[in-house]
Length: 251
Image (cartoon, rainbow, N blue to C red):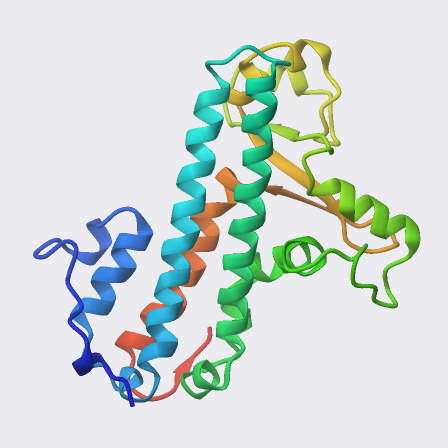
């Protein structure tokens, strides 16, 4: 019913090679604009267009997250202002995970399966963090119970991705914080020097931790660190759908 010929898709970077376009969301829009005649769009235009929207959403929430972290480098710690910004960080992470979950289920669709064999193999990072989306971002396990979620796990999951929980910090490569945290292995906030310093926002990846099973399996999600990988995995799926003829095989 709806196809690429029904809409005008503008190239955001005309004349610029695809591999030179940044950020990756803009690169994906350019790819779509340049392959409007792709066979996959004849039967799945809305499928693909919506998935490109999802990648755009990932970039949107990532950009907002980074802007908030930059603000935290400039405001006094332990103030109402800093606490409000930290709550906004949580909102951006939850929104990001929801968009990521949408893309995961796009790759599981019958439409994608017709073009890519076992697409899940091409998105290992998205697949790794899907439990965070399932147990908190889509709905919380504390609200919607499943057999695998014990009472203790539900409580920890509710804490892990909420603003009442603590952020985790992982030193960026070659950062000053590396020397401060070199003896720490949990990546949880437990160093007074780091906690009382703006170094934690400037020199570290900021993340949240959630327990995903009753077997002490924890997942740490550092949005700034993982976004380039997640967005690249998503781009690869769109690239396969638009640029390969016939059945695309996952390698």
